[in-house]
Amino acid sequence: MRLIIVPLAGGDHVRLEDLAVKPVGNNWMWWGRALAMLLAAGLLQCVGCKNKEAQPAAATAAAQTSAISVSTESDGIHMHTSAAEFLLRPSGYLQASLQSEGKMLTLEDPEKEAGQLVTAGHAEVGDFVFDLTHAKVAEATGKLGRLGKHIDVPGTSASTGLEEILTIEVYDDFPAMALLSATLRNSRQKDVALDSISLQRHRLNAQLGDSRAAPHEMWSFYGSSLKWGKDDVLPVPPKFSQENPFGAPVEVQGDLGRVGGGVPVVAFWTRNVGEAIGHIETLPLVLSIPVETARDQRVLASVRLPAKTTLKTGDVYSTPRTFLVVYKGDYYEPLSVWSNAVEREGLARPANNEENYAVSWCGW
Image 1 (tube, rainbow, N blue to C red):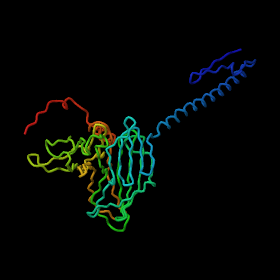
Image 2 (image 1 turned 45 degrees about the vertical axis):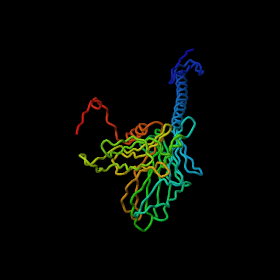
Image 3 (image 1 turned 90 degrees about the vertical axis):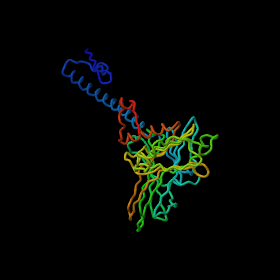
Image 4 (image 1 turned 180 degrees about the vertical axis):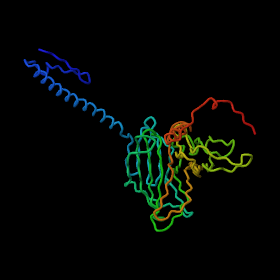
């Protein structure tokens, strides 16, 4: 009797004796039967390999499902991530809460505040109605990651005939950030002079994050360049108003003449929670992020976009993507998130070198 052990893929072996292959007088017949049994064993092994390959493929597909959940409830559309919850209210107000030690922390105190403000024909358009029940939820396809959620919410203004799609994007790689943009379309047989649109309108109350604080008692960071020597980190005063323009030169007195530029980020924080707004486009867009303290000492902030265009019938105006970040810490946290986001968008940060840390003397 001959015994042949044949190694197969995956460390398995086939014993011809185990497969009931017995030599006979005719060696050619014996080898023919052996070859047939080997082929059969090879086919079985291939099927097993394919099954083993199919299991990791199924596991990979499951692992590539976004962990962000989206649900529509009576108070709006809830978006839960691993770090935060974002809520789009029927008014278009997008608010953020930070998950911290089993609690949801926020500075948001919206009351009846609308989430956006459209100005057309030098008049405020205050009758936009959003249909949250017909919101469309899809997988995100942007540059901020392979996994996330994309939500389109339709809205209309009866007075102007403007149709709007409010778009929210949340990514698994940026669980504390939500992107917000809007698209306006003129559906009437009449031109609409679109002056401006404000997104990311927020009404903040420090007492919600720290019960011992007054509503305005929060720290703030302003990324705009307004004046040489002007503080960009300060506690919000009881009476305060600052426009914070970006993307356009700012006239100043003295030798400088003009200043401008900056980082399109404005941030607010208490010891427990903070929020920041701005935009993540990689171009120096002309816009402003005005901040003021209201009479009730709440802090009001928004991203104001000067549209300055006329929409004819069927024309569409789309805003850049603004962002909302919720965090714990100081302004470094949202600046880090913003920096990582714009790098994903294609604006790579320069590499550090020794000159960056060298002594620099300036004099006027």
